[in-house]
Image (cartoon, rainbow, N blue to C red; front, side, top):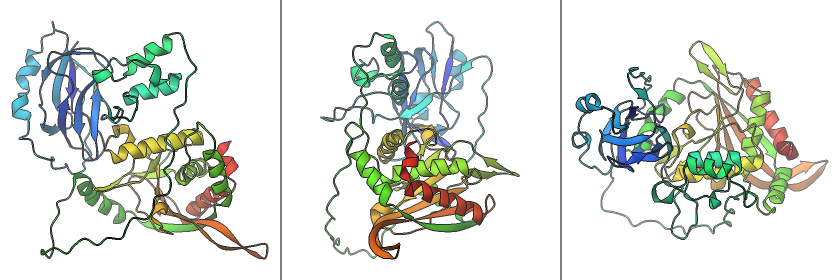
Amino acid sequence: MITKVIMPKLSDAMETGKVIKWIKKEGDSVKGGDVIAEVETDKANVEIEAFGSGVLRKIVVGEGGQVPVGNLIGVIAEPSDDISNLAASAPSPAAAAAPAPAKAAPALPAMESYKSEPATTSVVPMSPVPAATAGASAGGGRVKASPLARKVAAQSGVDLRLVQGSGPGGRIVRRDVEAAGTAPATAQPVVRPAAAAPAAAARPAFVIPPRTGAEFEDQPLSPMRAVIAKRMPLSKGPIPHFYVTSEVAMDRAWALRADLNALEGQPKVSVTDLIIKACALALLKNPGVNAQLQGQAIRVFHRAHIGIAVALDEGLITPVLRDCDAKPLSQIAFEARDLAERARGGKLRAQEMSGATFSVSNLGMFDVEEFSAIINPPEGAILAVGSVVEKPVAEGGQIRVGRRMKMTISCDHRVMDGAMGARFLQDVKRLLEEPLRLLV
C-alpha cells in the first residue's frame, strides 16, 4: 500500500511549509506512530507522525525545502510497491531544498481548501505533533514521549515513567503505551504533578542600554509578527467591537487557590486557571457569547474551547485548551501550563493552534489593572483580565482591605448585544466570587 506524505495544513493561516529535518531516512522502516519529519510553520516547529507502515521509499522535499500545503514531500510504501509514477512526477530532494537560509520568509495567511487525492493510492495526511519538547533535557528527567502517546497514556492511566520507548532515541510512541496498557500492572498509575510555581521573582534592575550612534534601525518582521500584522486589521477594522467591564471580589477565589496549592501531588492552580473554568461554565449558560459569524449565519458552539493568550518575544500566540467545560480544574491547570510552556518553545500541535470558540488574555502579571483586547477572528469575543489588587472596599458600612480584579469583555456586535455580554460577565463574576462552584 502506497502512502503519500504531504505537507500538512497546520493552521488556517498556513499556505506553505518548510521541511526542517527528516527523522527517518530513505530506506528506513516506518511504523504507525513513528515521527518521520519536522516541519516549520509561521508559529511553531511541528513533528509529523506516520499512521501508515512500510518503508520510507523516497524523500521528495529535502531539508530546507519549502513547498505549498498539500504538496508531496515523501512516499511510504512496501519494498515491492511500484512508486515510479510518483517518483517521476516529483522534483528531486536537491531541487526542492532551499539554500539553507537562517529563517524562511512566512507565508501570508490564506484559506485553502484541501484537495482529495486520486483513488489509485491511499492518502494519509501525517498527524502533526510538537517537536521534541518531550525529549528529556540534560538533568531535567522529563519523559521522552510523543504527544499522541501522552494522550493515550492519560486516557488509559498508564504511567509513562514505567514505559520503555521504541521510537527514535528511546522516545515513547503510541504503540508502546498501548502495549503497556495491555500488560499486567506492576504499580498503581502515578499522577505526574506540574512543576511547582516559582516563587515571586525580585523586580529586575532598571538598566538603560547605552545610546548608539545610529538614529534608528529597521528590524524585519518575524514570521509571527508578519501574521499578526496581516490578521489584526481583519479584526479591529471590519469587526464592530464593544466593551463591557466588571470588577470581581477575588477574596474567596484567592483563598481557595491557596488551599488547592497547599495540597501535595496536585498541579498548581493559577488565577488564569480559575478564570478559564469560570468562563467555560458561563459560556454554556450564555451560548450566544460562545458564537461567531459565519457568512449569513451565527454559529453557536456547545463546547467551550478556550484560547489562552501567551506573550512571546516575537509576538502573541493563542493555543487552545479544548472542552474546558468538561474538565476538572486540576486538569485545566496541568494542560494550561503545558500549553504555555510549549507555546514559548514553538512546539505546539496544529490542532492546538486553532479552533478556539472564546479567548482569555491575562496581563495581571504585568501589573496591568485594566485593558481591552482585540477579538481573534473568527471568534465572537475575548476576555481581558487585569491584576488582582488589594484596595479599600466598603462592605456593610465598614471599610476593609479586599482583593479586586477587573475584567473586560470585547464582543463582536454583529453576533451579540451589550446585554448578552453583560449577563456573561455577571455569571463569570458569580462563579469567581462563589469559587466552590468551579469544583462541582
